[in-house]
Amino acid sequence: MKVGSLILVFILFFFFNALGQITSTSNLSNHGFYYELLNFKSNQPGEALVEEYIELPYDKVSFVRAGSEFEADYSITVSVYDKSKKKLITEKMWNEKISTKDFDETSSSKSFNISQKSFDLIAGEYFFQTSIKDKNSRKSYSDGKIFEVKYLSPKYSISDLLIVSKKIQQNGEDKVVPNVSGNVVLQSSTFPIFFEIYSDTSRQAVLNYSIRNSDKDIIIQDTASYELKKGTNQIYHTFTDTNLDIGTYNVTVKVKSPTEGNVLVASKDFNAFWYGFPTSVKNIDEAINEMVYIASASELSYIKNGKTLKERIKRYKEFWKKKNPLPSSGDNMVFDEYYGRVAYANEHFSTYVRGWKSDRGMVFITLGPPDNIDRHPMDMNAKPYEVWEYYDLNRSFVFVDETGFGDYRLVTPFTGDLFRYRY
Image (cartoon, rainbow, N blue to C red; front, side, top):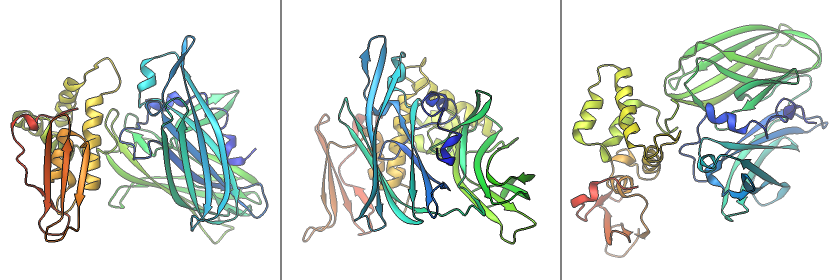
């Protein structure tokens, strides 16, 4: 059994729903699932070990009734190519099945299944292509990225860091549930991580842990002495009293040993956000400003005029609670959809201003994705323009790039009840 898998393999298929308590899959990128590639030491001489963890939300697959339960079936294919993406190095295909007795859970983005596969490879850069196919709906998701596979020496080295979603005891042993998304909910003052240190002999080591904010300032720091044993040392560390705010952070581990001149370093970025908030919300005041297309002027003024951050957050949450079409559900579809559109606008329509402030962003957030887009980037004797069509409204909207720098301005009147947010 692979070393990197040892602490995880027994719980990946039994505790997938527990992650829903402390992570969120709101605002997934276009591939529809989360996945993570990590370097561990291989048991194969001269090779490196890559562990891939794949997290698929329940609402991305179709469930069918099977007796008293609901079941979903999907297949996963992981193809590993060389860096040029032309030569297939290895490929693994397998099937997954999810079952639940709770019908509401079948459409939840907060519950998900985690899969894992290991790859022994020679150190170097590879292109990992991960594809998922839902067997019931035939819908597919796919994404790929270049990943550097590192050879970790058995003499003295450190694995990549794994953010831990939950730690449990099973058969008297500590087990961890991985946080694949890297999105950490701020409902707890603790932040646990897992990693491995490899050593060819017993030795003393000092482990320095730190968390930095987006300005690269160290905001949390821990130090611990450790007696490394010969072989693989599996280390679980928990930061306490973190009290992080919404934002992007970096966690770093440095290992110093009196008998070694080099310092081992491993680091990882992660996002912190509040429970129930989409992961794209990284600043509450900016998130309030982004509500301009769904909140009235008086509602926005009321929220913004909260004297403290705590008061603004309280009013913000109250607004969205009223918008929830299913208050008894843990999900708020209107909330998730709205900020999903904002995130898309920021990613695709940003120029001189953030995408949500642009004309295309305004139309996209208010009316949703158009049924058809007719693009004209290089027509003769015409400036670049786009025509967006909404069939159910029987309306078309024309955007013209007057400057040639991607700043498309709406030239079609946007009046009447079009400003009413639709979902």
